[in-house]
Length: 158
Image (cartoon, rainbow, N blue to C red; front, side, top):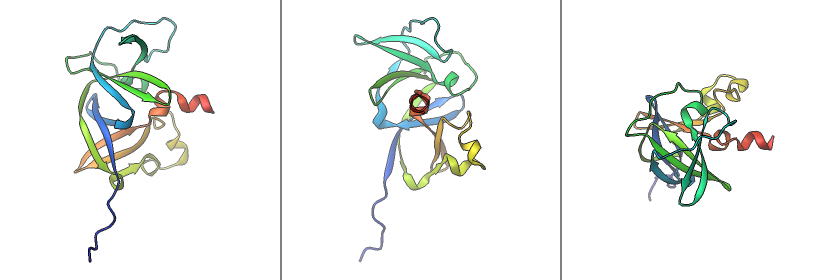
């Protein structure tokens, strides 16, 4: 008789670079990945909102993900991409330094962000609210982002 466990669940993520670290979001939220395109700046918006872009007739807001999560700014390069994500009925473009690949991480190899921080208040701090966990794939660490928090959906519901 087979003594193996029931098949484990895997989480598929789109991995990308911001500065030197690798981040990921669920592939279920990714609509497409585009090269950097013309972005129209909109006055009186928060600094992390880069502007809006035209995606096949639809106007989408574009955010600079580094600015949103508090990382230092950097020049865009040929590797810079816009990841178009959809959550609930909101579609947004997120600028990242480079998209690396699609990964499948066993959920057993994902450490929840609450297990990383030492106190409950740290888990909800400004710096940690954008992180849901850390995925470990053969010693390759991928920081998993909290998309509802990045898009501001959690703060609207409170």
